[in-house]
Image (tube, rainbow over all chains, first blue to last red):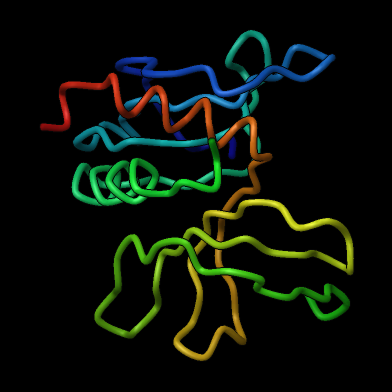
Length: 75
Length: 75
């Protein structure tokens, strides 16, 4: 991970927080100076370390949103 | 990954599909026979190979849903 540069442009949501302070976050992140993408990932308290996650385009995030809105089992 | 057993209990949404047929999916997945969790991940066309992703509890998925419902920038 040492050579990956990233900038968190916007924090959209904190999904959860672990007892050690790691947070699962939905952010808008620019990786290596490229156009920012949506990113769902675990982060250490100071945002210095990152865990597993995945990036999503705006279209993918919109599709996910629509699916969740119609997913009644969560209620 | 060879020793990880998984069962896709339910496919909730296909988020996107790549030119090679890999799909980004939201599934309910049981890992190694444990209670199923929500899982957002890339899968090969036959579900034999998996890519990066992350698991979410029902509570985390609900929090994500509520955040997306209120996130107006996607519209």
